[in-house]
Image (tube, rainbow, N blue to C red; front, top):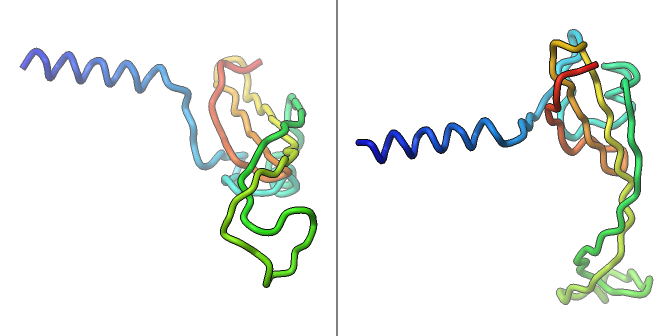
Amino acid sequence: MKKISLLFMLLLLLAVMTPSHSFAFRCGTHLVHIGDRKWEVLQKCGPPDFTEVWEEKRLERVFGVPYGNWDSSLQTRIPFGAVVYVLIEEWVYSSGPTRFVRILRFENSQLVDIYTGDYGF
Protein backbone atom coordinates (compact mmCIF):
# COMPACT_ATOMS: atom_id res chain seq x y z
CA MET A 1 0.00 0.00 0.00
CA LYS A 2 2.88 2.35 0.78
CA LYS A 3 4.39 1.78 -2.66
CA ILE A 4 1.14 2.71 -4.40
CA SER A 5 0.75 5.96 -2.46
CA LEU A 6 4.42 6.85 -3.06
CA LEU A 7 4.02 6.17 -6.78
CA PHE A 8 0.84 8.28 -6.87
CA MET A 9 2.59 11.20 -5.16
CA LEU A 10 5.53 10.93 -7.56
CA LEU A 11 3.22 10.99 -10.58
CA LEU A 12 1.30 13.94 -9.16
CA LEU A 13 4.55 15.86 -8.60
CA LEU A 14 5.68 15.08 -12.13
CA ALA A 15 2.37 16.33 -13.55
CA VAL A 16 2.70 19.62 -11.66
CA MET A 17 6.27 20.19 -12.81
CA THR A 18 5.63 19.76 -16.54
CA PRO A 19 4.66 22.82 -18.61
CA SER A 20 0.98 23.24 -19.19
CA HIS A 21 -0.06 22.86 -22.83
CA SER A 22 -3.58 23.41 -24.05
CA PHE A 23 -5.49 23.19 -27.28
CA ALA A 24 -7.48 26.42 -26.91
CA PHE A 25 -7.09 29.89 -25.43
CA ARG A 26 -9.94 32.22 -24.52
CA CYS A 27 -9.69 35.88 -25.60
CA GLY A 28 -12.71 37.63 -24.18
CA THR A 29 -15.65 35.82 -25.76
CA HIS A 30 -13.59 34.19 -28.53
CA LEU A 31 -11.66 30.92 -28.56
CA VAL A 32 -8.33 30.53 -30.32
CA HIS A 33 -7.50 26.97 -31.39
CA ILE A 34 -4.42 25.10 -32.60
CA GLY A 35 -4.42 25.41 -36.39
CA ASP A 36 -5.72 29.00 -36.48
CA ARG A 37 -3.85 31.46 -38.69
CA LYS A 38 -2.15 34.63 -37.36
CA TRP A 39 -4.78 36.94 -38.82
CA GLU A 40 -7.54 34.97 -37.06
CA VAL A 41 -5.76 35.28 -33.69
CA LEU A 42 -5.22 39.02 -34.25
CA GLN A 43 -8.89 39.41 -35.08
CA LYS A 44 -9.98 37.53 -31.94
CA CYS A 45 -7.38 38.74 -29.39
CA GLY A 46 -5.85 41.91 -30.75
CA PRO A 47 -2.09 42.54 -30.80
CA PRO A 48 0.07 40.56 -28.34
CA ASP A 49 1.92 42.16 -25.44
CA PHE A 50 5.26 40.77 -26.62
CA THR A 51 6.50 38.95 -29.71
CA GLU A 52 9.66 37.10 -30.63
CA VAL A 53 10.48 36.00 -34.19
CA TRP A 54 13.22 33.76 -35.57
CA GLU A 55 13.85 31.31 -38.37
CA GLU A 56 14.81 27.65 -37.98
CA LYS A 57 16.46 25.45 -40.54
CA ARG A 58 15.09 21.90 -40.45
CA LEU A 59 15.90 18.76 -42.34
CA GLU A 60 12.76 16.91 -43.43
CA ARG A 61 12.24 13.64 -45.21
CA VAL A 62 10.51 14.19 -48.52
CA PHE A 63 9.17 11.51 -50.85
CA GLY A 64 9.36 12.34 -54.52
CA VAL A 65 11.81 13.36 -57.17
CA PRO A 66 14.64 15.72 -56.12
CA TYR A 67 16.12 18.57 -58.16
CA GLY A 68 12.87 20.21 -59.21
CA ASN A 69 11.50 17.54 -61.58
CA TRP A 70 7.97 17.22 -60.16
CA ASP A 71 6.37 15.05 -62.84
CA SER A 72 3.98 12.86 -60.82
CA SER A 73 4.81 9.78 -62.91
CA LEU A 74 8.44 10.03 -61.74
CA GLN A 75 7.69 10.16 -58.01
CA THR A 76 9.25 7.44 -55.93
CA ARG A 77 8.84 5.96 -52.47
CA ILE A 78 12.50 6.58 -51.70
CA PRO A 79 12.89 9.47 -49.24
CA PHE A 80 15.51 12.15 -49.53
CA GLY A 81 16.45 14.99 -47.21
CA ALA A 82 15.27 18.49 -47.92
CA VAL A 83 16.25 21.63 -46.03
CA VAL A 84 13.16 23.59 -45.01
CA TYR A 85 13.16 27.04 -43.44
CA VAL A 86 10.44 27.59 -40.85
CA LEU A 87 9.47 31.04 -39.56
CA ILE A 88 8.78 30.75 -35.82
CA GLU A 89 6.85 33.41 -33.87
CA GLU A 90 5.92 33.37 -30.21
CA TRP A 91 3.24 35.77 -29.05
CA VAL A 92 2.76 36.51 -25.36
CA TYR A 93 -0.57 37.62 -23.94
CA SER A 94 -0.53 38.89 -20.35
CA SER A 95 -3.62 39.39 -18.21
CA GLY A 96 -1.81 41.09 -15.34
CA PRO A 97 0.54 40.18 -12.50
CA THR A 98 -1.93 37.88 -10.73
CA ARG A 99 -2.60 35.63 -13.75
CA PHE A 100 -0.40 33.41 -15.90
CA VAL A 101 0.68 34.54 -19.35
CA ARG A 102 -0.30 32.56 -22.43
CA ILE A 103 2.33 31.91 -25.08
CA LEU A 104 1.16 31.15 -28.60
CA ARG A 105 3.69 29.58 -30.98
CA PHE A 106 3.24 29.98 -34.72
CA GLU A 107 5.13 28.13 -37.43
CA ASN A 108 4.80 29.69 -40.89
CA SER A 109 1.80 31.75 -39.69
CA GLN A 110 -0.15 28.77 -38.30
CA LEU A 111 -0.74 28.28 -34.57
CA VAL A 112 0.97 25.04 -33.50
CA ASP A 113 1.13 25.31 -29.69
CA ILE A 114 -0.43 27.16 -26.77
CA TYR A 115 1.20 26.97 -23.38
CA THR A 116 1.11 28.71 -20.03
CA GLY A 117 4.07 30.69 -18.74
CA ASP A 118 4.85 32.41 -15.45
CA TYR A 119 2.84 35.20 -13.86
CA GLY A 120 2.12 38.14 -16.13
CA PHE A 121 3.27 41.72 -16.09
